[in-house]
Image (cartoon, rainbow, N blue to C red):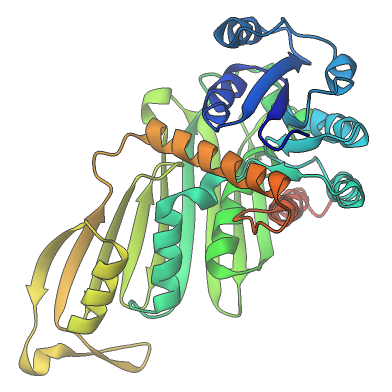
Length: 372
């Protein structure tokens, strides 16, 4: 591999593949060589966009000496076979989520990547969001006390997912937890540490065999419960997401599945207010109530708390979601490529994140189906 040039091959160049590669190509030294495994209209549009040949067979793409890294953007049931073929051909692999359909496939992929000293990473780009880092700092600072509870509610649209779409077929997508939920299991593990799947449920759309709503509860540590809900039921105009973490002295809410906006509602002393504002630099502070004298004393969870004021903090207003999405895709790719070029580089997201998030999703799916 030329240190200044990295040849990129793409398997599965659909709508999102085109979106992602447009961001990957902004990294210096990346050369798009070709694409394979797709004959969708979007793939031919991508060929025109980048001036590359029309789709070729996967085997032909993997046999090319000028391909160093393969980006896989196909449905989940193809990830294992395509990634294994790419690794066997000596190519680094960046795969769309999930890593695989089950743990046996995942472990086989990671073992081969380790054996060959190759990348086998997953596009779990949420950890590159600056809001992710801010929430992590807030949790670690304990400026609002301990974390007590959290949730992620995903009221997603199904307008682009017709009844025959592979998304609904568990043999092709793995189900909602595996195909989609891995993103959010990964984020909360980054915030709260390794979790234990406690319970999970799934329901089918009346009159069909389509599972369109799932829910699960994960316990982090000894005393933190987080609920995850995903429902693919909404018209696109009502597609919306909300994340919330409850602390002892307030709560934090993030909006949309790629968050750009965060709101903090809290009570605190002068020093805790300063600590929070230091984390959310450039945010807007709105004071709700100021306390003095004996009113400063409060109690919660049988603890004495000194409260100077109640306030709201708002950060990220006006930042376009799609711009943030592109930033995350670029930053993840840059981080993974840095490791390819220098194995001493410590990545923000590694292969183990892809495995851990899949393990949670597999367990949730099993529990939702009675332990199958």
